[in-house]
Image (cartoon, rainbow, N blue to C red; front, side):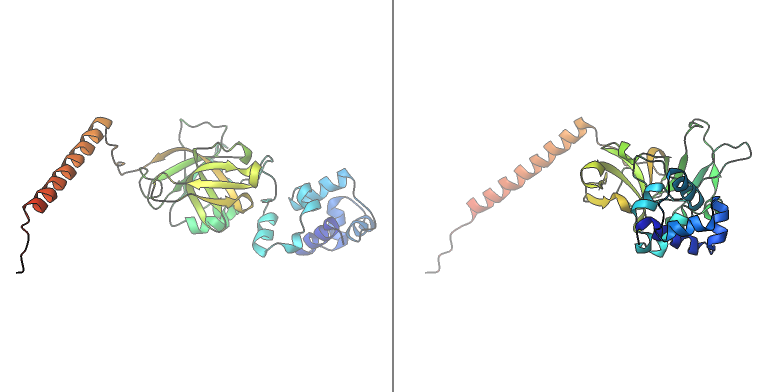
Length: 278
């Protein structure tokens, strides 16, 4: 059975629909739907669009991805409207909330909510219980979300800071050397400086500001959301950078101390008397 026929049959059964019920919703005869599912007939572009609209899955995915090979988690994400197989240049669906004036909220994901967000990011019931706020100086034409980060990998941005990001639709536009909030199902929320390798090898390189942490690669197929860094809020002051003049003075002082120690060691060796055992 070809991929499309297998996919529409699988999706129909997961919805608990008979061929009669699904055909009625799709606006076609049951015999036509049966023909598509059993490879007797091939759908035209209008039928493909109807299937895509009904199941909330891109035409590309219906035609190219064998859904029977996906995990239950991945299938669940697809059925909730988040097509993880849409390429970076395509629009991806974002679950969001609005206020009484129909303006986009900025949802807040704190450290305790991070684990739940990893699985519930595409679930409207989960997103709507997140706390929200607004920032009047941010554009109303863009979507923002705030995440509380943990750890010291992005120092001087302190542990526990609140990092706000702008939702990125086109992942091919991720700029090298810029900070982003990345969501993957395996590692959850990560705040890193990115090197974009999507076109060359389908990967992103994640870099830390803290030089104690090594860079590492992730496959773009494992990424679920990308948010471009906008600003952060913290109650802690970042560690001050040492001015260049002070740094030079510190280095010179250390060199002077090292030279002094070397001189003391040399003098001690000179003053050491030979030991005569006779």
